[in-house]
Length: 109
Image (cartoon, rainbow, N blue to C red; front, side, top):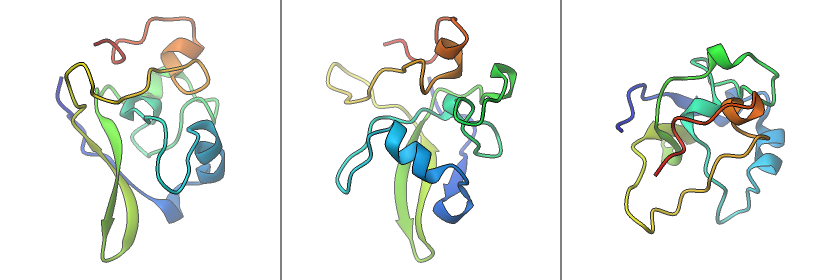
C-alpha cells in the first residue's frame, strides 16, 4: 500500500510532542514507528488527544523524520517492505483501531 496523504508535521506545531516522544520511546538516535493512521488530517495524535477513530487518516504510510532549511519535521511516506522492514507493530496505546478493540487494517504484513 502506498502513502496517499503526504501529511507533514512541523515540531513547533505539534501540541503533544513531549507525550509522543515518550509514547514512541524517542531517543537522539531512534524511535518506534509512528504510522500515519495514528494521526488526523491536522496532524493531531488520535489516541493521545482522545479523538474518535473516524478522524484517523486512512493512509498506510509511515511518519519519517526529515530536515530542511526550516528545521526538523515529519512527513508521511511509503512503508518499507520485506522481512526486515524495521517497523514496529501498532499498540493500543498508539493506534486508534486497537484502542477501540478493532483489527488495525494498516499494521498487516
